[in-house]
Length: 177
Image (tube, rainbow, N blue to C red):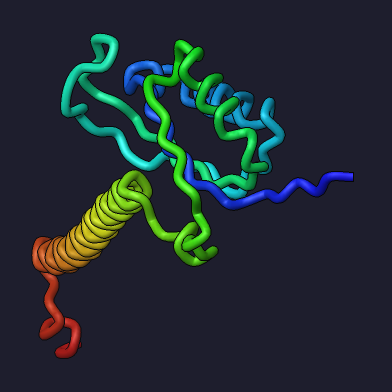
């Protein structure tokens, strides 16, 4: 009975950026399928980054990198690389042994997640600014309405005073009686 030793590996898969943008889930499923076909246990899989290539690969000038940490038997690496080379969706692959990788290293932010976090932060900042602007506008409207109400109350008092004077009676005349 032979025991199979599985080791931790780090794989970097290069795929076409246009195809990744159009069908991200399909690309992820394809990479998973290539790995699982070769008895691989995926530990973590994430988008690493989208970058221009140093030289065109199959006519593509930009590529998206997918970073995968996986446990696999040593003898399956050749089969994984062969399947990736035969795939039309995977442009290149690099697999390195990951004995030095800790779980903390796996959880570090990738360039793609840093960009996503910045976008989320800027979107929430924009939303907060819009909410503050709306609150300020509502407060200004409330103050303007209160001012208009005050002015209308003063106008009503002035009209009442003017009506009393038009009657020909005054407070002084009433007191003399």
